[in-house]
Length: 489
Image 1 (spheres, rainbow, N blue to C red):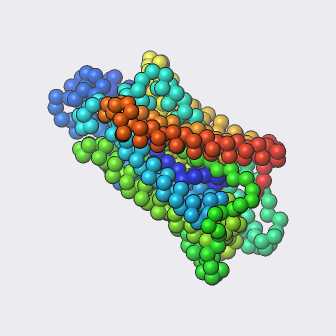
Image 2 (cartoon, helix red, strand yellow):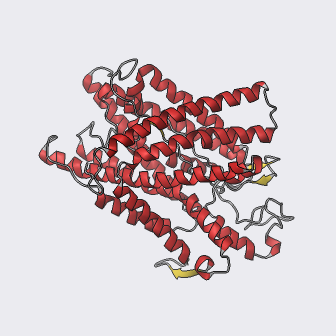
Image 3 (cartoon, helix red, strand yellow):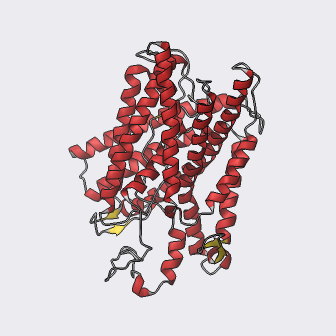
């Protein structure tokens, strides 16, 4: 979630599939000896190999815990601190109820999606390496291109949103120290442009990691940071409730004012890095269950305690909206944790987009050295060497520079991301998983199960449209105060 996006509870991302290493794997599979590769994608090899899986690709090493960490990294974003505001729009009855309902929908559709990793037999069937591959195998036609467009537009939008979100947290640290010195009413307005540039430079460095699944520790660190700032926000909310001596808020929520809710839904990971045995769908079912339980628990506690602390005056973000001013050093730690988390989350979301472009380029210009050749560069104090690819260096750097410039040009882009997320929620989280499951299990039309799945899909469509309308209203309000490269917080 993003700090200023007025969000309903988010979806679990599609962790079963990811193109993360497809560009390099494509080249390696094309050049490796035939004794180490399958003659056709998805065809089992006659013998076991320590280096390659049954489809001829490099051995997958992802486990239940690395998959769970990737999910938590992507889902528990700094927007969890905005849930107090979100619950305030609905009240004590509807707020928690909506969160539980969306948690169940997300869990259910994620289970359906996990079952689509292989076509046919869930253990030995043909692998669908990416979300798009699963759509192609089960639905085909124009739906494949539609799915891909929605996915990558969302990923691009989230990269911009995370750049903005991180800069807001950096500004919050500076403002927290300013308020400590000059008081809560002190003149502490400042620009976020420099902080966006700092974040962009950092992401240029991390974007050059060729095999993202091998740096599992980055997601582990990001997940720990998620718990850190969420825990601080929760603790401060509890302390505020104790100080007030009562629970704030109302049963029906805020009765005056426009509600600009937007569903943050991002097609983040499509990771095809989970090893087998056990069967991949079993691992991802467990990872989905664990991550949904963890994220829902944090959402409920942070949202409810924040609303109890501030009632209808709950800020858009408990840490960057300065619902709290002291202890300032604890706020600094929490915002620093947000920044560290977003550094990792940016990569979790962008790596599939990086890999998609690189795979496409490698297939189209496979004889061009600029695209395919890798140069070994010594790494100081290590015996291993970094494999430098010029196309990867240039393309990923330009991508980060572009997202940083757009963030500086339109720092209210979070509301635009809300629109993208709202429109992406229904097709990617609900429609495609439901339709693929129906096709794979050959569920007949007008059967009770088919009708139930269609009712679920249609209901979520209505929610997405409502959230999109709220986001559009938010963008229109932002444009009234818009000054390019001049925004301050």
